[in-house]
Length: 301
Length: 303
Image (cartoon, rainbow over all chains, first blue to last red; front, side, top):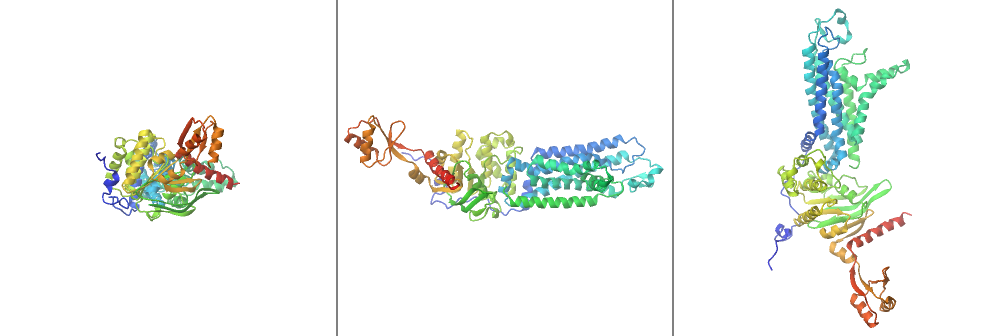
């Protein structure tokens, strides 16, 4: 009888059975760079990234442009030159918030998180890599939308004539130089770098909330509440007895932070540059991220 | 080699896994058998460091899971259910895994070829069948060419061809000297694949034995005999020291006398036989008996 094809075992170990399989793949010590490369691949290969960023870009630049064009015939607008960018980014930031939540909650929703943590059992490293990749992407994309929006405002609205009554207007204090409406360096920085940092931080807060709640719809709802509720609540606080609360809600509303960076704070009596509120948002985001780290490390995945 | 020592997992007052101690050795396929809800998946998640044990520990080639710097080159796992993002293509899914463990990118095409998904590498798993999803999971497990492989219910929902393919794959991987640990709730499936068997029920270890010994010990053999005059036959068998059991269909089952002896006894007593046969209970039955006892034990203990 002829011998059948040899068994795989005989092929693998002709002389004596090997104690175990030896892989030809070299053993390496992975570091945060590997996790970042992996997270970058993840974020760029799902469609939700494309549509959230695209909608942010279109809404921000589109509404900003419409605002400028609708006022282009006016002699004097009475607003800082770059203020129009706020109205677009106010809505556009919702795209960044949605992406921030989805970056982590979609992994829980699909079961991908188990695969991710099996590949990288250091959970803190996974969250750090996600936060870095998302924050940089959100910052650069928001900046890429805010800069052309600011350029459109400059191009369309620069030729305003300043009436005599406006020279003493507190809101326009920094905007009028030698009888012309101009954008000061602070205003340019606020409407571009400041706005992009602010929205990227809000997105990072959304990522931390997504990591805490592990549920896309829930986390997006919470973030909408954080962004919109303070201002909406303030609208319905009429009485004198709640005036302080109303003012605080308006002042610390995330929308006021962004508006202040564009030079149009909602609290008329106190002209805030917006940077202190950005610092506050950074603190809140840092605290929420710390809670997300703790939750991720403590529990079962 | 996977080593479990006193592994325990409690959720509140429920104990899902209790004091499991066993080792999974290289070179053979080790079956991990237990009814649904017996703690197999929980145990596997603890092996992978996804769930934290309430007590005890797991070692992967002597180290804890989170001490593995590039775990995918040590242990690859196919988890229950789909653990992929349905909107990310098969290629990109494997790419992000390879990058996280610094695995050479050529391995992606290798494993896609191996599991037969090369043609749909650029497709999103959203449209994959159950079998294709399992194959993608297996490709992820094999990506790092690991020494240890773990499959949780790999044949669930697969067609016969897919089942055959996975069986052969597991045997081949074990023959290469790897550690292969595969869970199932089907004894018949394990009987065809596994060389070694670990059985749990209600989170407790019920058996840790070679497949051959399990069959020998648990496959109940008995003699079935049928006669129009079974009262006399019964009396004859009892005189010879047997303990025949009456079956509802009128036949007798005897465990302690061989078929030949039953035939001789019938002849000596002039009893006509309509049937005399040697029977073997299925492994499935043996498995159910084993796990059933653990369920009963717990029902009593809980009172």
